[in-house]
Length: 520
Image (tube, rainbow, N blue to C red; front, side):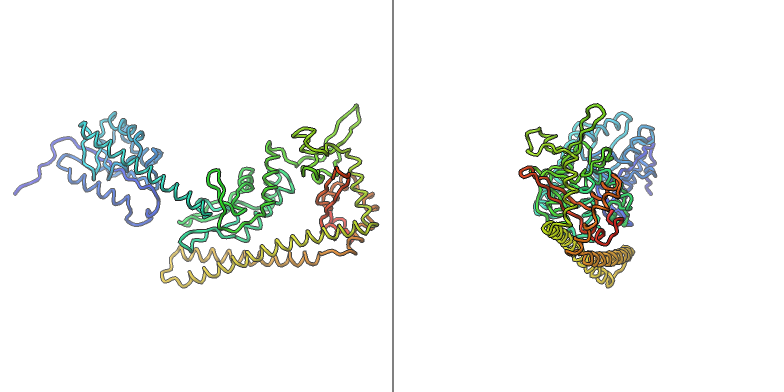
């Protein structure tokens, strides 16, 4: 009987290295990494007569690209090689170790430095000879070429998807959910989050600076988008900061645009923000590029601060002053004239005391001027109509979302093979339906309030009838607060030296009912 000869040489300690670029399939009981290691163990077993033995340590990199050396298992392998624990490295294919010629050269330099050999199970070559090294370099060149081709295909696919306005993947954004019921995933409006997105845009226009918006969002407890990965892990949900608010305000996805590099394409999803509002926000962000917003202390009694606009150019008129001795001379100066030169705007500068007195006088005269009362009534009704239209849009979007969620719950409930993932998804849908129905109730309540708060000619007359006495009873700080809450916008027209005032209808209603605290 013949017997295998025992190995006569020294033991060769073999480490098996495995890698897979994506995490897909790694949760399986027997995955690609297991298959690679099994092949390596079989190859080492076939070389037992040469003294080869398999080390028990696993060097598995699941979900790591071969185009980089930033891999935990590869780092451990190189550390063990430097410590003299490994004599030979076994891989299934050359590209499992690296897909980059430069990185592979660095790895081979480490192998040569510590006398470690390298074996590929499916590609036989001997690196101790010049022909073997040439074969290795050729194989590696093709591996790098394949990686680059795959990368180009993925980039081309993403570019083509975005040119067609399709969502090409990535982190979900606040205001939208990803509908994966169709072969091509698409963005659908999350009605509850859409309300928050719209409010964030209006908050920035009202406050004029990022930091006050961040503070207000923190006060309300609003956070970034919370979403779940395919594995069911929860991501996102972090509090807003200046960077995340800026990213939200500048994201064209909210006006149904898809960005690819420097180009914008029409998206197939529904917009959340009106393009005019979006452009106003971008203009304000650009104006505040240095980070200086309008959230400053009203130190010198600027009654119209943040409310007065130049009709000629649309810019805010900024409150400033000059001093002569102990005296202060206050002015409102057009922002465009300040930034672009004195001749860039015909309005230039207005004496603060005179324009403030003119605004207060015009408000006081409303009670005695039929035309002024009619204009205030028209503006107030237009504002209420705009809010009702927005509430109607929100209600319609929310009802569509609830219909989709109920349909998906019904579909998942009759699944023939229920799983833990299905159960978790149904639970999430039930939670969202509950939140949606609560929000729908709030929208209907607010719609009723707006309809009840609709003002008429009698309300306008009552609101301003006793304005003079109320105004004189207030301190200068309280007067500034009342003007800010009563008046939405003031425009000065330099061509005929007139002012146009827009009012908040809810404040007019409060004044009409004699409740100045509600107005303030």
